[in-house]
Length: 186
Image: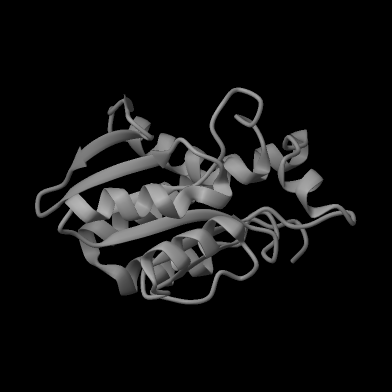
């Protein structure tokens, strides 16, 4: 299984809302004491479970071009993949795991769908909410202190949910992940 955590490369974007896919992949690798290695066009960490090996991949290109890295990686991989991304339509503290679906207005997911010519791949969407009129400014902005506390806890739950996915299957992971509600709004 390959997990693509979406984000933007570089220190300028490191702590932005749009990089939540990177953060989940990094926390998952850290939880299993694995480190990322840099390859041409991406960073990778590998985690082994009893029945599967998980490749955590962070594309090192702009979010809107993530699909090209996914396509190139998948051309040599004979495995299933999942994409982890932020979602402005979910409040901070909420997540959704789905087997397939549209891009929901997310440029990174749109790029993956276009490059793979398919919407049929699992995706884990992490809520970052939406504030203000300028969406680009918001997603490329840093987490506020209150948001960071909620999102840190959400990332921990995402790692727990991914572990359930690899040990007990999609349905149990979906039930767990989709029931997480750390949002202050609900």
